[in-house]
Amino acid sequence: MRVAVDTHGCRLNQAESDAIAEQLRAAGHELVPRAELADLYLLNSCAITHEADADARAAVRRARRHNPAVEVIVTGCHANAEPEALAAMPEVTAVLGNLEKGRAELPRLIAQALDSARGERADGGAFVSVSRLSRSVRRERPDAWSLPPATSVPRTRPLLKVQDGCDYQCSFCIVPSVRGRSRSLDVETLATQLRGLVDAGHPEVVLTGAHLGLWGRDLGQGERGLAALVAGLRAAVPEARLRLGSVDPHEVDDALVRWVARGVDGRGAGLVPHLHLPIQHGDDGVLRAMRRAHRVADLEQLAPKLRAADPHMAIGTDVIVGFPGEDDGAFERTHALFEALAIPFAHVFSWSPRSGTPAVDLPDRVPAPTAAARSKALRERVATNWAGFVDGQLGALRSAVVLRRRNRQGQLVALTDNYLRVVLDGPDSALGRRAWIELQGREDKRVRASLRD
Image (cartoon, rainbow, N blue to C red; front, top):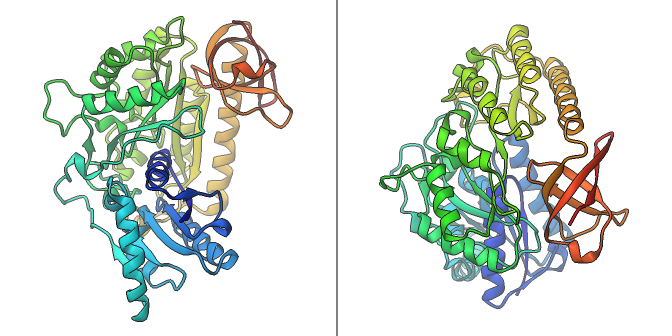
């Protein structure tokens, strides 16, 4: 069977899709890039916003419009959030939940779903297998997700899923309802999986999860937290180069700061000096309304520690602009925080109501034009910070990973340890490898560099 796997949403979804694709290939199926070429279109969906829901439904309709004979299976967060609505779509063959997609027997479950759907269609419905997850259910066993990571993916920097679910109750977020409580894989299992990725030739591995900073809290071990995970992985696979996904500011302890500050060695191995700290807002009143577990002071105290350890450490964040109750003062405090801390990387979003979350009922919504203007102003602040971050490193040597594909201009593209995407000239032998580079110049949003080894 020819299968097209399509992914919407976050890095965790991408990691899961890579694993699904590899399992399907191992089961004898052929992977194709588009639904038009497929017998089965499998959509790994997102549900973080209503726009994500709409994107999933549009993708399903588009797949059947371009290939009326294709079978359609929807999995992922939208499948968990609204299985009945998806099952009612005439284009959908089957709906599988997040737990179902994470099991090693997924190829067999897909075959079962397709067989069952033929009978269901006679009754006018789709096959549905969705284990309900919520904030209140007990944790699923970690072995409920048993798909190993894909080792043969074409991406230079594969994703290693170390954790799933979330124990927090942020008022804007649906993730705990569709992914359940936090659950982690143990260090030994992850070290084996990391070894497979490194032996397959991947120069860098990104550790990811639904809420990465909760890793280990459910394992009942003496040592918990990301510092223990990094220490265990570095001891087991010392030649690995690791990068962390998002970690909330209050979850970064001194032990993790020391690991990030240590950076990479002469081979480019180690934990890179880059932390993505999703603060979500720069005003404590808004953070309370968001039900976030941290406060502005957590980032204000952490950022100087990181910069003292490495002045060129990359600090990134996420921020939601226009959250209900955000007045001019709250936004100005957020803008001032970004200026004071010179944060060079940020995803800036305008809030949108998401059913199933408490924030949808909050008063004092911000008019859309106001939210758009604030988003624009904050992005401009981040762009200025980024330019200063780059200019302060010109002439410096950085460890980088050269991606496996050249850009349209035929240049090499690389990502430095501190998260700068650079372009440079060089031979094909550099593709997909670690290299030391010199940062040479900045042209608008591009950074030029040269190979130095």
